[in-house]
Length: 90
Image (cartoon, rainbow, N blue to C red; front, side):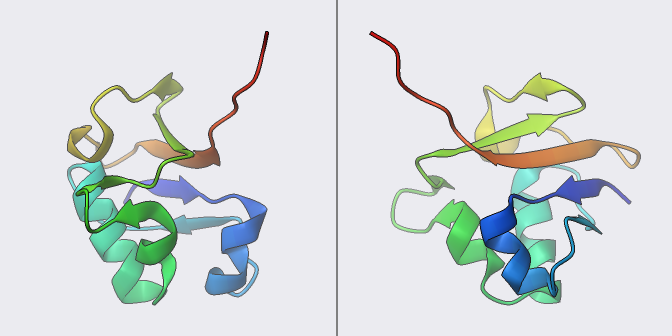
C-alpha cells in the first residue's frame, strides 16, 4: 500500500502518526481511503465545492510535485507527501 506522509497540523487526526498507509490508484482514491481510516482528514486535504485539493496543499508522489492533483497516479509502493505549499518571494 502507498505510504502517506502528513504535515504536523494533520497528525492530530492520525493519533500523532506522521506516516500512514492508504489504498488507492490515484490521489483522489487515497484521500477517500484516508478519510475512512482517519475521519476528518479529507476536510483538511480536499475542497469539496471546487473538487480539488485544498488551496495551500501540495502533493508530492515519489519525489515529484504533482501537476495533476487528485488525478495523479499512485502505485502500490508509492510514497506520497501532503505538504503545505510554500509561497512568497519578491
